[in-house]
Amino acid sequence: MALHYNLAKVHAISENDTDFVLQILKLFVLEVPKDLLQIKESINDKNYQNAFQFSHKMKPSLDLLGMTIAFEDTVCIENWTKESGKKKEIKDTYKSLEHHIEKAVKEIKKDFHLQ
Image (tube, rainbow, N blue to C red):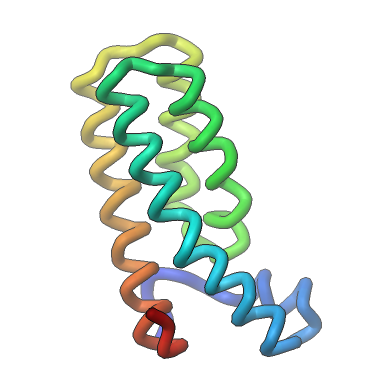
């Protein structure tokens, strides 16, 4: 049962094509955790451009899977990069993003028997 993600948009664009839905989920599970690590490294290095790029890249996937809070976290990270903000404030935002993504990935893997 999906608690940390919502497939309504995925089903709407796929016209309930289960193979397409599974491909979207596999791509999410494979790519988003890698992008998340890139964001973490970029924040630690104060590499604002990379943090922006990986946050921006992640946003459509989060939106597609109905992960509203995680989506909002990426918007905050993007805004932080534009303002070259303080590190302390962004760490809490990153932790929230990481938490929501980890929960969704774990749940998707369980729900769809993915590795």
